[in-house]
Image 1 (tube, one colour):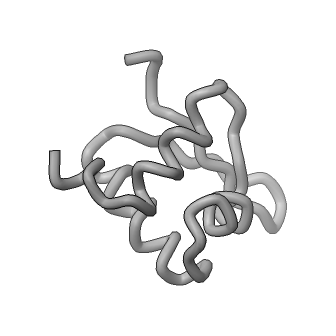
Image 2: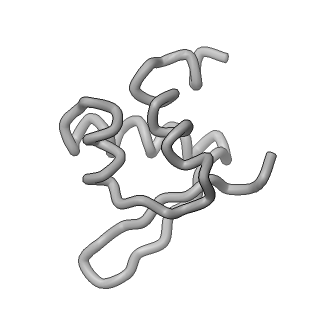
Length: 68
């Protein structure tokens, strides 16, 4: 609960709920944090198995790990 209780992480997860993959830059904007802070939050979400990341060229795309 503490993991998704953080407002920035919660905003990122809500943005990902439509099924699209978003870049770290887009998620930082949604959460209202810097890219460095967003990367830290996304690392925690990934470690918990909530998100997955795919690289395409210079961009990193993040999506929810599963429909649950």
